[in-house]
Image 1: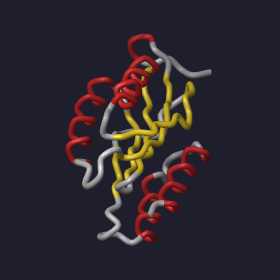
Image 2 (image 1 turned 90 degrees about the horizontal axis):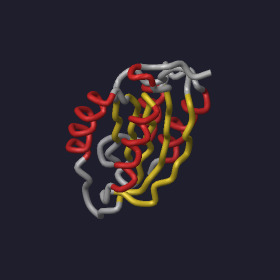
Image 3 (image 1 turned 30 degrees about the horizontal axis):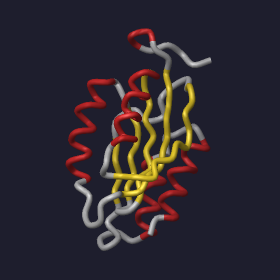
Image 4 (image 1 turned 120 degrees about the horizontal axis):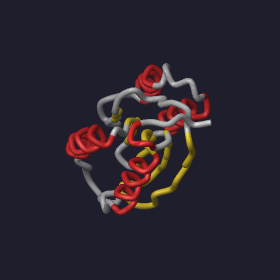
Length: 141
């Protein structure tokens, strides 16, 4: 049974994948800056991965806050083809702080990205969630 968190809500997680809608460079630093501020004030934690073309993100926190954040993301015109991978109550957070990993294909080898992702999710006890992020890193271009 999911445990209650602040303001009377239940813990919840939504994971999604999407594709960058704009050609050229996406301002990931700008996305991260705004996300950290807003998600911090909303009590949302998670992990966002980007490979230059696709995004994979897990959002965790109070159910209403996570759903509102995901609704904003789904309407964001910087990406398209948003697909919900998981939408579920959870007992506890898997990501203690907001994180983001990004691999620039010109700067980091695919093997290095895969190894770094394995380290980033080493503390994730939900094996399905860990496999999803490592799989994304393995399949990144």
